[in-house]
Amino acid sequence: MGKFIVRVLINALALWIASALLPGLQISSTGADGLIPGNSTAGTVLAFVAMGLIFGVVNALVKPIVKLLSLPITFITLGLFTVIINAAMLWLTSWLSHYTPVRFTIDTFLWTAVLAAIVISVVSMIAIALTGINRSRVSRRS
Image 1 (cartoon, rainbow, N blue to C red):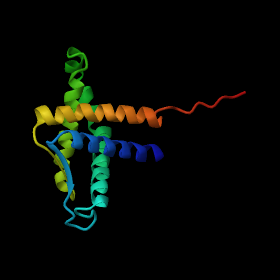
Image 2 (cartoon, rainbow, N blue to C red):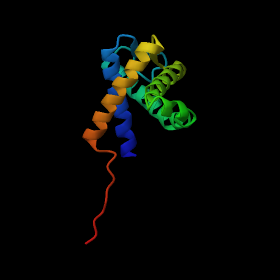
Image 3 (tube, helix red, strand yellow):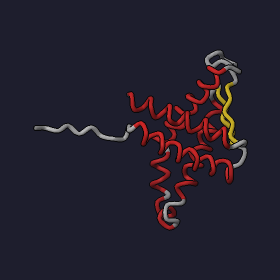
Image 4 (cartoon, helix red, strand yellow):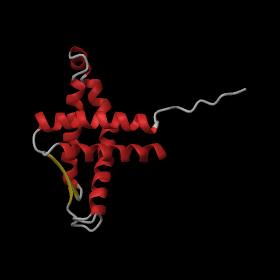
């Protein structure tokens, strides 16, 4: 459970950095239902955590199926199609956010979503390396 929470927070951090760097990527809370406060710091943090959660679920459930189905084109492009898959997962997360009190908008797929996918991948890779959540614990027996 601890790894899951850390991954959601890493996703939220990566989305925050991507939205700070790219003007076409925006995350905001509507605050209409009272669950997430509107224009406050807590509301902003909760909005990014909520989108980190949705993005993590999309990556866990949908991305493996899409990667399997697109294996031939990924092989032909020497893995570069993975960036397009990551951008598509962001686009799907943006579409799913319309059913939540948090709005995640991407203005264009070609530039904003692809660049955001690259930024999020790099930030996630660095954060996961720093936290060490992928390291397996090996018990040594004497």
